[in-house]
Image 1: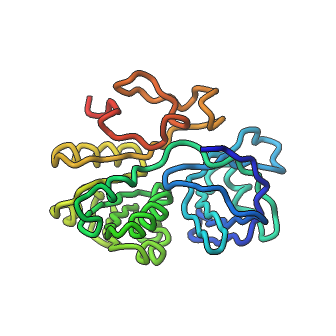
Image 2: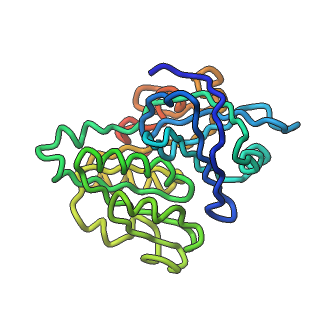
Length: 263
């Protein structure tokens, strides 16, 4: 898929929590085709301490409005700068990067309407699952979102997720949904045909163990530290059954069977 370097226009910046913003970007020309699970490398301007681009998951693509949505967790200087953008500003992005989630599982199922995927996310890792859920629903599947956070205030964009499927919640303090971790939620007693996950590595490893125990295919979107986004700097290397691979180029989405997590 051809990569493009674009000066995208900021249409809106919405504060969705104390630490997160949703940036809606557009362009005068149709945005390039993007797949769920891919990401962009965003340039941070007007920062004396930020020299590298920031990798941001593609949260959603609204083709009708020609919009790209980026969910940004304002953690360091670079992401705080991105969170200070305003409508009318320009954000330079290299996109689309990496390999996304597998959507063919839904279309190759005996009946796409009978295909039951569960999309498991934690923290800002829920971001790529919104676009994924929308694409799966477009194919006729009925996604179940299983979203976890520390407390209720850390749950993000729930109304958006509810547009595309059933939403199940866990919080560590029990302030929303079921108390505990995502892998403890009662919905996992049901049968699912496919599992997609993104979030903190310990959470994804637990999801991968659950999937393996149930004999269900599982894909995980890794969040290794990335700098170039092109596989040149080697800072995002992950050990796999095929050797060391750059997450930004070979991933960020991997079938968990390719990873050495079970070891």
